[in-house]
Image (tube, rainbow, N blue to C red; front, side, top):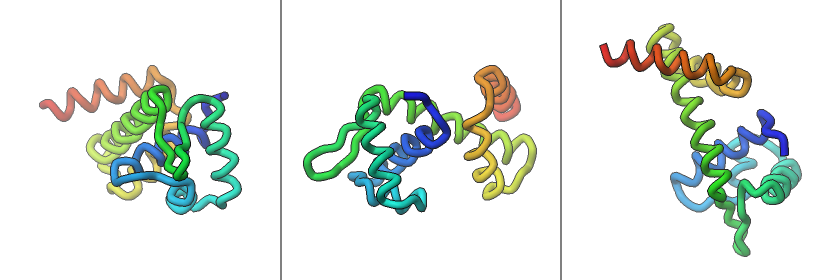
Length: 124
């Protein structure tokens, strides 16, 4: 399965929602404002790819592979948000929205350099 922006959004959403309790497809649909059939298809694809498991009660959990990818995505999102807000003085709401879009297209090299710069500025 190719890791697309959509796949990353689903994994990050399941990861974020799971911090507050059990996650079901309807929770993902509501959080992303997607239709239930779209989420159902995505959940099926994520299961097939080995990123999530669906329990008999409908609860979705990330597999080790899914958790690794979701952690990576969430960390990148948080770092970009922080970079935009602290380094560029973008208001937090705009920084959050922009980070959500940027996180899917930024190169690994750029992300690493942004994080290094952010860490050097924050530690000063």
